[in-house]
Image 1: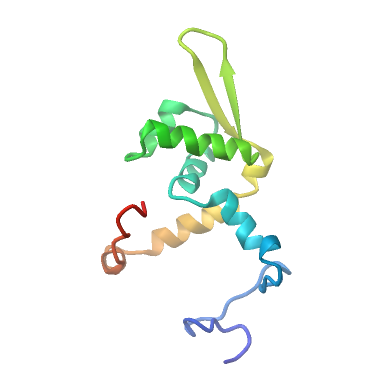
Image 2 (image 1 turned 90 degrees about the horizontal axis):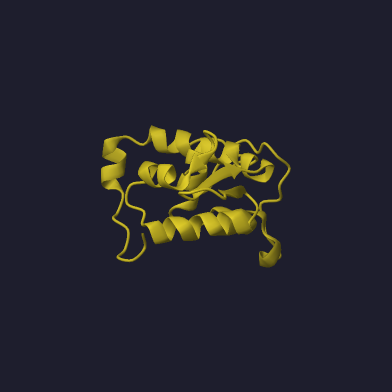
Length: 139
């Protein structure tokens, strides 16, 4: 196989845009694993994608993410806040108001979210129909 050709697909060449070492000799220090630690899960990328549009309130995010429970959204937002990619601001007023905004670290995930949106947009209905259903409990 020629250098620059994806071994698993052999369809098209890829271009490495950054000088990142692709092998992870130390799994505890793998850049892909660090990224997945922040973005992993079903709802985190979607929450971040919706926060790219600016500051959002909790219920606004919930409306934009059909299927997520209040508990799961709360957990997702807490984890993203813990990882430093979003900021939570609570206002002392009645009724209580909480707003979420991306931090500069969160904004740095923009190219990854854009790539995910572009890739997802290229999947046609036929492609999605061929994808296996996720295992029970995987979602």
